[in-house]
Length: 337
Image 1 (cartoon, rainbow, N blue to C red):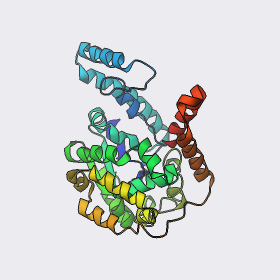
Image 2: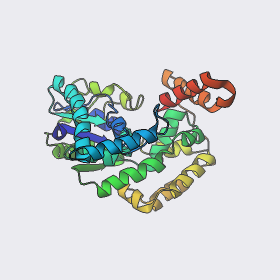
Image 3: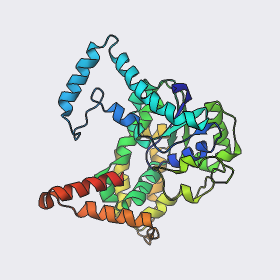
């Protein structure tokens, strides 16, 4: 099964939904909604702890380590068992489609890449990176209605994902192809030809024109991922490449936050992503922080939902409202993810 698996690796808002739609339009590739299959397997207690899990994580981790130590082949037997679980799910997703490859695009895998690479060392990994400031701005705008402080308190996205993906690109020994979002949307045919070669399939023009009626990527339009931009286009566009600077214009606090985040990222990690610190600093310096603030997105069901969720989460005081409010906040957290 692992030789029929393709993982698209990238943080949220990196363009991974676009890339999965493009690849899912290929006749040999099926791209189901984000499975989120490997992350819970990676957190069963042996490799990581889940402090808020509804069981005692310390006891679970200790027990898992003892069980693994007692297996005839130790850790390898444990990995084989987890792989068998994932294989069964992947096989059942792939079999009815008639496709030869199954694509799993789950952004959270970027935080368990060591585990994924050990579980599926022969799978193919397409790693997508994007200007970190564009990733952050899109995350703030899309999921937090522009509230950059609430977004960072909820999830310091760049500080978590940039080092993890950069280390994977430098150190992992799995079959891997790296592409920058900016390059993909600027020259989609060239890069889809290169990715097709990497995956061992013939290039199909439908992967570029993924939204056309003849493209076969309907399944990849479902599920989690970008609910607005990708669904509103029929092929890659460069419209969003510089949008992050427009989103920060007129708001000095957003620019200041971006500069602070940048100081927490290392030069080697940025270079591995395909961007230099000097380049990003120059881009931030050119943002007109004192100019006219950009208007927010037009009101839609999705943007209204985001505003309600962010507002609820920001104004909830759990110590005063008790169990009901804690459940509301937990629901907001889940939905914001």
